[in-house]
Picture 1 (cartoon, rainbow, N blue to C red):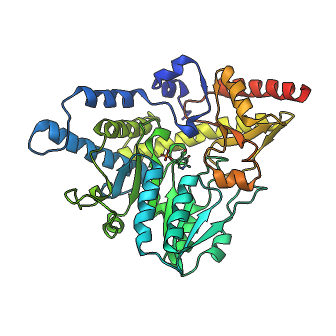
Picture 2 (picture 1 turned 45 degrees about the vertical axis):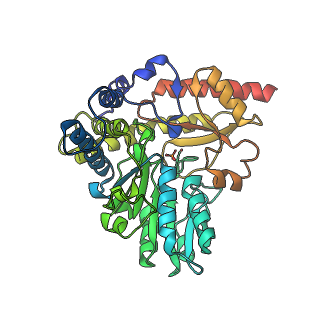
Length: 406
Ligand SMILES: Cc1ncc(COP(=O)(O)O)c(C=O)c1O
């Protein structure tokens, strides 16, 4: 069934402001049911968790609901869902905790395709522990992260492989399952950054072979909150620094202080919203999520082809290479124009597209583009229309013409 874009867009009142949003990779708009759920918590009797009285029980229920929702989204165990303020803070938490047992002779594999939040924490804890950092390289000509190199990079000294499920710079979806199989054969753990990939496709953390998978709700129509999922048995063997009276149970052991119940309610609403994107989908929430995100993936792929083909056809526009298997995210430059200038000029026309390295520091540094401003990023989301794409292409065409004449 064709994706009902009018229905999808109706859930985002902010679209009424008329901007053309190509910035969801940095943070999507929030769906209306999310705002309603957050508002309801702040307006209702919900203070802190207690099983002694009803408002306290509501808070307990909000947390449990959010764990179930994220578990459904990712195919994970609700008892292994850890919430945190951001993906970055969760990577630091896992890295610091795992690295307690690392030392000289141990190795960690990171990739130059990854967002810095799945690179620097591993590099820093490895350095602190005297462990060795091993780099997986992407192919600059294709934007791929070749799986084969991992055969040489992984050995019995490897403790962990950190890899992205989708590049936030160029969209590449590495073959995470194959990389994870190599890591597991060597007894290493796999930490997958799913922040960019999650809103664009169905996710099954078991099929991916992800021991840890991190995602941020603000990239999929939800609030600013992140979750890291893993097998509860894996969490159980990890011991972060924590307060004495706080719970030692998993997953609470990894959550510090009082959580934002309003945001957690928003997370559940965002997952329910994603599950509703294919109105014909039936069954459990997990089944509806799989159907809806498959519909989103197909819808976005068509629009993305229109965007990339259109950009590639404009004289003076250069695209960062990426393989066919990618999230709908492209980085480009217009001639010699500084990307920040392109972003500003597009912004003047009501088009939202980020410029810079978007924290994909290693990627842009390796490409030799970081120091001169990175690139401009345009991403498709499930509220993007063909008209949005055409408006962006027209604007880029005009800027490219101007830049060529300048
Ligand atoms: C691929 C990727 N990983 C990690 C992050 C960091 O997420 P957070 O802002 O939740 O720390 C981002 C944010 O843009 C991202 O795109």
